[in-house]
Image (tube, rainbow, N blue to C red; front, side, top):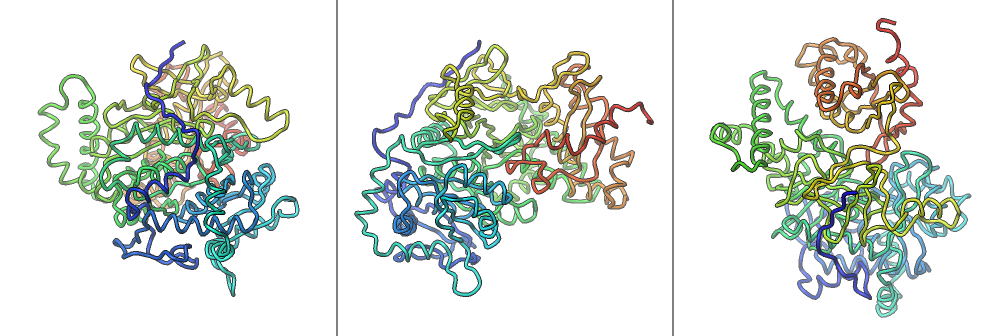
Length: 632
């Protein structure tokens, strides 16, 4: 079996924890800007919790928060938690969208030796109950009144929950959680709090992150301070050009309840990267405005976001001439990237000649839409279409794809600025070893791999033993490792389809390629036990509306789903996907659905992964129709 390691191992100190990063900045330069907060007033009291801290002058529409101010804010909230009798090892729920207070409360929980338990802010009352009950949370910080109501609706089944604090001010005299906790802790002495903080060791539990739960109940992954310290150290070492660049900054809009955004958060605090927060948005215009305001040097994204950026850029004008110009510029960018990746000396004269024109007409504007300073995009959470990766690199924004799981404390492989192969998830990070099992499963070993799932029940212990069998983390993903150590993910063990003819098909590869088409939002490939492979697809609402306008069609999605010309567009995406597989694996038929799959409807996880079993359950009739005789 193939195995590959990247030299370099971060040595976990015998003492210390994640909060040490904050104090190290105070020793070096306490005025370093660690955060930028949107100056538009949030609905909570005061820009900072610390009684001695306050806002600095705004930078554009953002306010700078220095390392000293952040420390003061964290200490104030931590004193409140201590006064509320939150003990070392106690679990504290955190249910809010991505915002400065999320990070503030996270570090305050660590400061007192407690354990953060993130809950997606979109979680239902039953999901909230499960996570808080299973973790045994003694307290929960929520964002809004409706979140608090969600917790209250199930509080009768949460015997250990003593406190619920709400970040946003409510009607009447209610004070937000940050100033309320700061007031509660006014009588706590500094040395008492420091004694609690200093007692936290690398081996202590830092967080319980519950898996998205594409099947069954989510399980809590036990991640220690050491796990996160190793993960962040190896990531920032491998991506020194990103995290260590002068004036480095980024804005997070992915959910901090997800391990990817969470690890980046800690990496920014560790490296002194100026970090902004904003809620996730599906509105590309709103996203462009946000990035233009903040002007980050790198992005943190999932493939779907980059797909939206590309689709929006391709539809900026209904002019046929401008559409052709963009199409040519996109093809040129892809060709430029592919040529630059070869060993023949890079792009030749034929590619260099039109580049200056496309730079002026297309590339510069697209980079401007991302804020004008972005050089890199860190991308995880699923595979990115190869062509899209080449497009962005050709435009001047290199997408650094990586791979990781909650069980590996996020990223264990990543492409680097200097060692980069589009279409792969990069090489293992320093100190990480990857192995491909006899059945093609990707296995990992390293200091960021967790030690098991939360819970004392036999089932949890059994599952931990299976996942960590033989001292390797068994990912459940199928993949390959080439001679240079680049890892390619080819599918999920549990999602392999076996057709009636006995052919094994990895649906995720086909789905990712089909979904890369701008008109397509989601795709589900089916065919287990069937005579051939087929697919359900849903339409991207914005792209479909733009297509309808450009082709003089109405906006009725039901009519668009059966439009022959639109189906021809979808067929082109299916044909492109089929070109990469054998005839037995190719998609023979597809059906366009009227409604998209959403997290709210229960078909997607918060990280936008398909809940395959639920989609199949809810679309049995449509799937059956794909196997009826033509015209039947």
